[in-house]
Image (tube, rainbow, N blue to C red; front, side):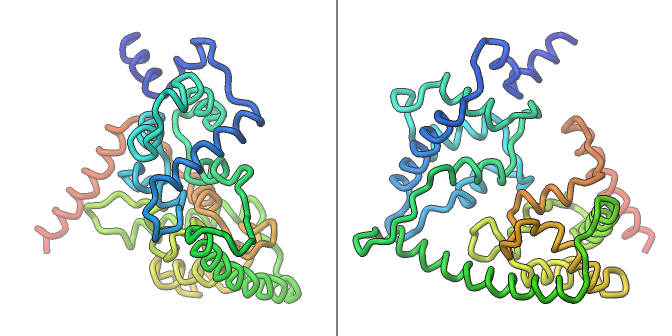
Length: 287
């Protein structure tokens, strides 16, 4: 039993905290963010604007929207090609402890994105690189979408629709999860992260109201009889609390996890998938 727990703790990096390594503070986080961004630019093709969201997806092999320390370390050492001479193991562990503040052993795409945006430069000079020009063009598109959604949000607010409260959020989360299960192939465990990616066509890690509505109506196939337009708008107002007109993958994931079952082992998850697959097979045989 102790050996199993020790192995689990090793995977979740709880042993790091016990070893005396302290979480990185705000100044260290800013410095480490700059190191990761520089490495990201250096390892990105010259014709492509670096995208932290795409980088995250490369190590999130199961599309869960969460990565472990080992996957994070793989990103840093293998994809960003940062040797210990530039980022020591102790600093990497300190960074992880700061990111994994709840000690769950996992960090979300939203948490990783927040790190990568710390102190990110926003150059506006004519000497900006092609990376920035491409990124600025994409940002301009996002700004147009955001402005459109902000106008829509104002219209919604003026119409008297109020943001969904905690109880309504829990109910709406359950409706979305049920629809997600119903529209997922029987051999595949539903992944909210993959669902988000299907409407995040530019890979920015952000979606607008129109993209969110497309997800609900077209992908999850929820008609207004099950989720009215006013409830959809109330849900959006609650998610887009800052009025930016966009929500992140982390904010969407937080919604989808409200009240969701949390199996605490890989075997439990496999058992669920296996059971559903077997039920699907039984249905086919019965037919």
